[in-house]
Each structure stands twice: as structure tokens, then as C-alpha cells.
Image (cartoon, rainbow, N blue to C red; front, top):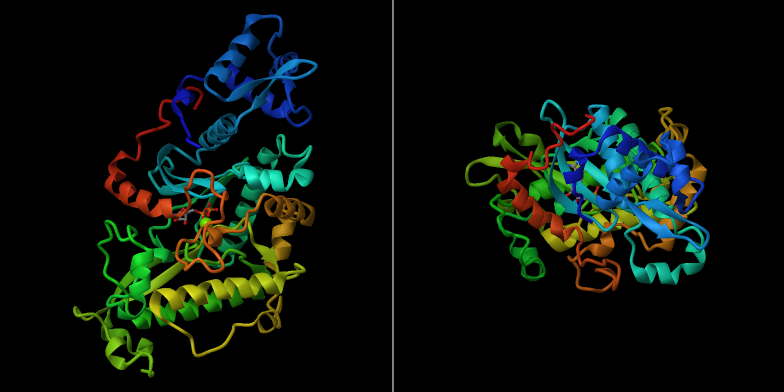
Amino acid sequence: MKLNVKSLRYLASEDWRTLTAVEMGSRNHEVVPTPLIAQIAGLHSGGTGAHKCISNLAKAGLVAKVKNAKYDGYRLTYGGLDYLALHAHRTSSVLYSLGNQIGVGKESDIYAVTDGSNTPLVLKIHRLGRISFRAVKANRDYLRGRAAGNWMYMSRLAALKEWVVMKALWENGFRVPKPVGWNRHTVVMGRVNAFPLRVIRLAEGKRAMGREEAADDGLEEGEDREGVDLVAVRRLYAELMELVVKLARVGLIHGDFNEFNILIEEKMDDTDNQDDIVAEPTESQPSSELGPDKKGRRITLIPTLIDFPQVVSVSHPNAQFYFDRDVACVTRFFSRRFGFESDEPGPFFADAVKDLGKNGKRLDVEVEAAGFSRKLAKELESYMRAVGVDGDAEKDGDTDGEDDGPKEGSDENGEGEENYHKKKGQEDAQDDKLDDLSLRGVKGY
Ligand code: ADP
Ligand code: MG
């Protein structure tokens, strides 16, 4: 779904009031009757005002006319919800300009945005209604009576969850994007200047590259970074496993811990002070491969974790399953991509939660207290299950097609996170166009 902000400029304050009225009316009405819209907006339903506003909004695609059996009325569209959220972010000075789309997930759109001081930020728009027809059909019973209007509610839930989890993690020193703002189905966060783990490769890459290269054709396009060495790989692996354990210790499991949701910043170090990181050579990793690069530098890989709508508490009945799956996701990726297999087994869920809350921190409890109640968590979880949301892993093209890979019909537009990498290249080239769709000068702002 494209976010077309053109009409933002032309909406007057009565239009905004009318749009808000449609949104409010939607809480109790699948189709909001026209007189009710006028009434909530405080406009004369008999007068031309209300009708003019509604027709403006309809022309811009922000509301859609619906002929009900009993009456005519309107419903809010995704575009309308987007506008309300953008308007709110702009009014509270969270967001100043809107740039390129940098990611298309199955359940979200990601945009590069900035605030008033040009800080690079990211706007994540949750789109839980963007589900496959098949999923809807398969779950017709569950969705019956709830599908209508539900996408809006569920997208809000996903955004709220992302917001409270990200905030809790950020405030407790985890490396996640800085939470900046939340409104309706959107979250604004710091932009991480990093690539998904998905694009990181070995410098020499002799071992794992054969199959990978073929599988990833096209991904390398425009990539001008050097590969990484095995020391960096080994350290990153250890750090990621530690992260899974650290999360569990404070009560959380990411639930979608994979190479798309781990962003990697590459930091070049001089080797002078690197004694501590020179790993012991092993049979599979001879010392020749452990050294610094030809320029005497070594790359350190710094992970940032993103994407939190699927986080679960360690008290979830299937917690161990999610924990093990998170571990397995990373283990499998490291094995395939880098030919890296850890000598150490685990980590194991039972060990990780042994010290649960010992330091007094239970972020799963904090998240609940912050407004994402267990009831909401359940609602979101069953909806996600019903519509086949199961994380990025299923969109992973980096497989031999055994147990994962895109599921048929799961991605209507044939767009997945892969698109991000292509878009990312474009974005770099177009960075100077960031203000393309600037909200500057928008009426009412
Ligand atoms: P989805 O739920 O659709 O998977 P994500 O939150 O994982 O959405 O974001 C999709 C992609 O957008 C990520 O893989 C990442 O490449 C990019 N992205 C998301 N958030 C940020 C951010 N804060 N900074 C930089 N890139 C980001
Ligand atoms: Mg993701």
C-alpha cells in the first residue's frame, strides 16, 4: 500500500475534524451514518459543510462510501488512518518530513522520516489487515464478524505492543531503536544506520558461499562493503546467544529473532588493542582465517534488535518453543551463511529462566503494566495466528526449501523483506531526496 501524502496539504481543519469523526464513529458502527459523522464533527448535517468535507475526504481516498442494507454511510480507509496518525505525529512535533519507503514487510511499511532537527528516524506503519485471501478463507470462522474494522484495531494493537516493548528494552539498556513516538497503528523510532544481518558475508567466504551465492543472487547488488572475518562472526554469534538469554532473564522472548530483525553495524577497529578477541584456532577455523584484514583492521559487528509485535513472555505456555526457535533461527543462519557451528550447545530455556527476575526486572510484567495487558496480548496473538502471521522467517529466501521459504499465497504482492535490500540501495542513492514528500507547509500543522 502506497502512502500518498499529497492531500495532507489541502485538508482544512474541518476536514480533519470530519475524518476524526469517521474514526470515532467506527468504534460502534461498521458503516458510520452520514448524519452521525456530521454530529460528531460538530458540523451542520443539513448544511453543505459536512457533505463538502466528506466528499473531500472521499476524493482523497481517506474514507469510502458504503451502502448498507439500511442506510448509506462511510468507513475509514487505511489511507485515512495513516493520515490521522501522521497528523498526530506532526502536531506533537514527533515527525517533520516523510522520505522514502525503505521497507515493505508483510505486516508493515517502513519509511525514512525526520524530526524538526533533521534527526533520521523511521516510521513503521503496521498493516495487519494486509493478509492473504487464503488466510482469510482458511480462518473464516474465526474472522467472521470480526474482520470488518478489525484490521484497524489489530494494527493498533501491534503498534502499541511494539511501542511498549521497545520502550521497556530501551530503558533497560538493550540495543534497540530509540522509541520516539506512537500513534494509532504507527511507531516512530530512531533510524539505525546498519544493514540487516541478512547481507553480511565472509570476506573470503570460501566455505559457505557456493550454495549461498546462487541462493542470494541479486542481493549483492550495489554492495561495496568488505566481508567480515570469522572472529567477528564468532563474536557476533556469542553476543546474539547472550542476547537471547539476557532477554529471557528479564522475562521476554523475541519470537522472531532472525537475520532480518537483527541490524548489524560494522565498526572498523585497529588491531592494536584487540588481543582479547583473537580466538583460539580450531580444526574448522585455522588461525590463518582468524587474523585481521590486509589493512590490519578488524571488523566488529554490533547488533541492534528490531521488530517486536511477536514478543512473548517467558510465562507463555509455549515459551520454550519460541525460545528454542529463536536460537535455532540464528544457529541455522550462521551455519549456512558462514559455515559456522558453535562448539557450545544451547543456550537452553531452563538455564536462561533460572535467574528470572533475580535482579528485580520483569519486563514482561512492565509491558503489561504499561498498557499492553494480557487480554490485549491474547487478542493480538490469536489474530496473528488466524491470519498466518508467523514472523519474517517464513519470507526467508535463504533456504533450500525444506522447512521454510515463502508460503504460497502468503505474500500477495510478492513483496517481502527482500525488497528492503533493493530499496536500501535506492535509498542510499536518493538520500538527498529525503524531503521529497515533505510535510512542511501542510495546512493545520
Ligand atoms: P516487519 O514487521 O514488517 O518485519 P521490521 O520492523 O522488521 O518490520 O522492519 C522491516 C525492515 O525495515 C527491517 O528488516 C529493516 O531492514 C528496516 N528497518 C526497520 N526498522 C528500522 C530502523 N529503526 N532503522 C533502520 N532500518 C529499519
Ligand atoms: Mg521484521
